[in-house]
Length: 200
Image 1 (spheres, rainbow, N blue to C red):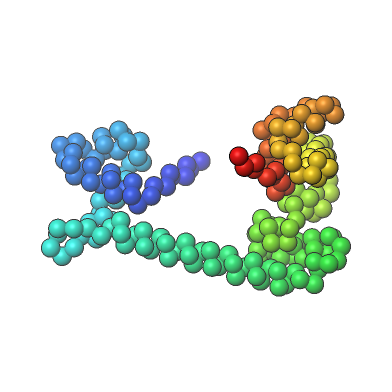
Image 2 (image 1 turned 30 degrees about the vertical axis):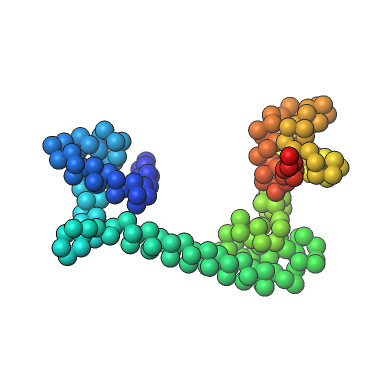
């Protein structure tokens, strides 16, 4: 099975390339091994870096140009996501005041166009609940998770949104649930629940 290569940022690559020039007496292969890089990383990074040398060879704009390009790409990515959110909301608008099943049918029909994560985010739905609706034959483990999530949500609002994961964990344990605080934290995160931070 092919392993995914670790991704390195531009600043790191530049530092390593400059280090390789400084340690010219050390082979690239040895330096790669020392830094835990994949084979031939340095030779590839050097070639890329040297493309950005200025005409007189005194400076190199590798980092500046690539960070600017990265910023543009990130902006475009955010803009694209905003467009998709608007599109989802526009297309699903007529289902928002109907039964949840109608909204889930819209999501199911549009999974090839939008990610389930994004549709749930825009439409205020829980991914686990949607998956259960779509695949009604669920395991006992998933049933337990859903039951605990429902209990967490009930407690959270019963205690006027003041209880965090630690206090809710204690309440659940007192009610017979065997569950850790870290699991409750993850479930609350998935549900989008958080108690307000107290200011001193």
